[in-house]
Amino acid sequence: MLLSWPLQEQRRFFEEELCLPLALEPETGKLFPVSNKSRDVRDRLRDMAERDGAELRFDSYVTGLEAEPRPVGSAGAAAHPDQPAWRVRLQGGAEIRAAQVVIATGGLSVPATGSDGTGLDLVRRLGHTIHDTYPALTPLTAEPHRYAALAGVSLPVTMEAPGAKRKLVTSGGFLFTHKGYSGPAVLNLSHLAVLSRRAGGEPQKIYVRWTTSDAEQWDRILLQGEGTLLGLLRPHLPARLAETLLEMAGIDGRTQRSRLRREERRRLVETLTKHALPWTGDEGYKRAEVTGGGVALNEIDPRTMESRLCPGLFLCGEILDAFGPIGGYNFAWAWATGRAAGLGAASLPGS
Ligand SMILES: Cc1cc2nc3c(=O)[nH]c(=O)nc-3n(C[C@H](O)[C@H](O)[C@H](O)COP(=O)(O)OP(=O)(O)OC[C@H]3O[C@@H](n4cnc5c(N)ncnc54)[C@H](O)[C@@H]3O)c2cc1C
Image (spheres, rainbow, N blue to C red):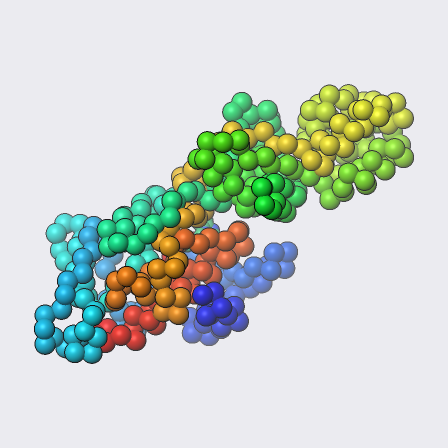
């Protein structure tokens, strides 16, 4: 589905059709509007829709969606006999009749943005399978928070979440927060933590390697380096974290490297390269950037995004059972499936 709108085409659309110049952020390879304002994206899209004749209704909350068989002899029935007419009910009692409906109501993340799950309920009532939903890309919490004093400290790390079949390894920013941990590396594996809590079994194990050096390299540093242990750690880590990790390993940072015992060295290397992150919970949908689970993909035609169960109904974006890591993949999914759904709906009679 993602390949239906390749990245180059997406870029051309934004720059040439929307007239929104983009700038590449060299460190991440991400594209942003040169103005750096998200409202510019929204405004240009809205302008384009209005220019092309779309009627936009704001503050309209959909509460119901029903399919009705078309009356025999209606225009649409002749061209597409199985296609029902749709009745969209709005809060306040108003109704909209439509030949095709595209549902793009998102998931359950950050309900304050309006994504409260109504869309999922509407689709469930129409007979679609909804795979259990859960918060993904959400910060983790720790209670008690052994690292509360480090809130605000950030650094690049590598994290590992072992699984029965395979392990998930993420690299990127890590942020100590007042409640626990955030940053791309944490968010990208947070769904495994969330799912393990839901399953009620053993909590997902999460290990952190705090620097780019692996166990062998740290072994060498701690066998050959000069000076105190804190002095050896400092060039590789933020000061407060270096002190805390030494404390966690039960080692006085003022100890001269040459006086480090073998067992202490082993403990310190493990703390630096395979530190079991103490987490106990997550910040849920309130802070989740996406929702895992959703409408079963096998019930959707991937070329047009039309429901295989309800002709004339199209679904796109986060309401579907798919999400990706941090890095623009979720926007790309929403745009590519949204475009395919729009084209699919427009290709049917009555649109
Ligand atoms: C804080 C945050 C940061 C993010 N950062 C990134 C990022 O950097 N890169 C990335 O790729 N993704 C990011 N995402 C994820 C990305 O924003 C979503 O995956 C994407 O917007 C989903 O698009 P969508 O159109 O499916 O749903 P949404 O963007 O959630 O839009 C759904 C819309 O439907 C409306 N709606 C819902 N129910 C109803 C109803 N019953 N009646 C009427 N309207 C309704 C909602 O108000 C909302 O406007 C982020 C998300 C959050 C919350």
